Image (cartoon, rainbow, N blue to C red; front, side):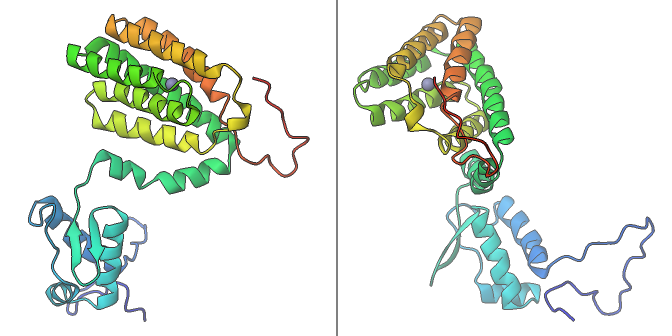
Length: 264
Ligand SMILES: [Zn+2]
């Protein structure tokens, strides 16, 4: 008998199974989670507040400490609460970013094992970024254009510093994502870029690539400023297709023939 699983309350018969599908036994901690999450969602425990203590939850739900602890740890992994020893579980602000970052470790693990998936990620990112820059070119307000201009100036000034050049490059792309005003766009685009960055090969960077890249950024900016979605999309596609060559798996499959050399 495993105490960790939900038992049928005394005096009640289990619901008869009518469709032939077995009913999954759920862990007790999942039940605890199901009780806590709606209370957090409803605002009963707002951001910044403490959840009841382990002891209170145990008493309140009639479950043991392991189930409560596991449920709280799950909430922590979800980014819903932060657990501080001696203090308890405090409700954290949840954003599209924190939600997406929850899957990052798994995504990177998955990608490192499959070059097909890496190619699919590049393709997905391309389509996604194209949709985003089109939106930006259609919607950008004068203030947003000025902000993007400032990011571009910062990028220009970092041409001689390859580390800062990369940082300001990413900031420029984030600036484009921000114009959409869509938090999901922003978070997904950021995540896809971070996943790809894991596979960035410095060694294959072609000489003069930074100048080319900067010119493409300038062209993108001009298209956004002129509210030209087609021009912006065209420039971005060329830019990303070129950049995509710099992302490759870190290790070739074991049985593979000689290491493929990239010439561009
Ligand atoms: Zn770029």
